[in-house]
Image 1 (cartoon, rainbow, N blue to C red):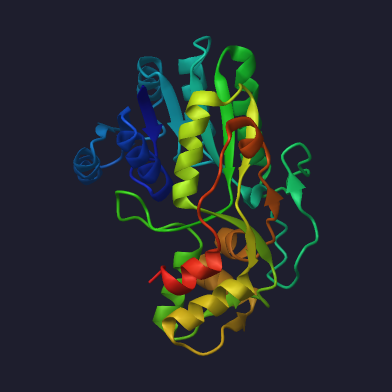
Image 2 (tube, rainbow, N blue to C red):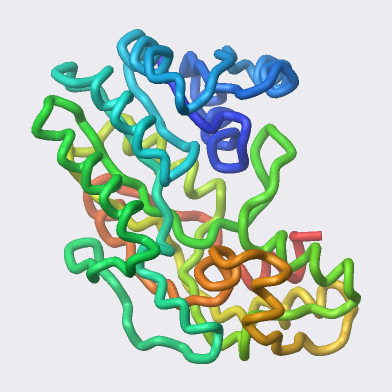
Amino acid sequence: MNIFITGAGGYIGGSIATGLVRAGHRVTGLARRAEQAEELRALGVIPVIGALDDRTLLIEQAQAADAVINAASSDHRGAVEALIDGLAGSGKPLLHTSGSSIVGDACGGDSASPDIYHEDALPQPTADKAARVAIDNLVLAAASRGVRSAVLCNTLIYGHALGLPRESVQLPRLLRQARKSGVVRHVGRGLNIWSNVHIEDVVALYLLALEKTPAGTFYFVENGEASFRDMTAAMARALGLGEAQDWPLEEAEAEWGYEMANYGLGSNSRVRGERARRLLGWAPRHGSVLHWIEHEML
């Protein structure tokens, strides 16, 4: 299959692109810079230099491909509109990458929410996440335009990248802060819980969805959950530091910014991904994120 993927120079997109090449697919990846293009070539990915704002380029690449994966920004509506327009009426797959902060509660890390969300019962988004949810819904609605579209809503992803030496979003920030300060910290009391999934299991699901997803399908991508207090405790053990410490939200915002402090690291995001297992036969192989942090992360 000839597959076009955006975000090919990143952690998720680069890992997916590498998995696709290993599976025997011909992969074209969007790269923003020449140095990214050389990295992609080394992985067997055909680079195309461009940006998410290049509407004409995105349409051309979508029309030339057998399938499209959007693994770049989950918040760039123009890119999604261009990809849908390029695929309209073709019956080809479009896999769009979202994130489970869409159900985040921005609790400041001070409580463990009892709310667990399922794929057929999503809450109304907060004002901060309404635009992202609208893009997810746009992708799902593309099924009515003859696109075999799906949204893969990833949870906290852990594990080392495939191919490109890139980092995931959440845990590496905690690790960098700990190495800089000598203290492992979590936002607030660290009681907030996130569902999580290993990057290799994410890649396996994208490959399955390309082949088998019904049009207009939303998937949560998860295989377990853990509190940030437990994850930072595992990190402290791995680093040989003392106990992880609480960190006021205001100080966390100064370190990581509003979005990351409030949603990426300071919210609850508890979901269950039943649909991928039932419809696609997805069977995640990796287990505890706590074991990975303590024994494999460093």
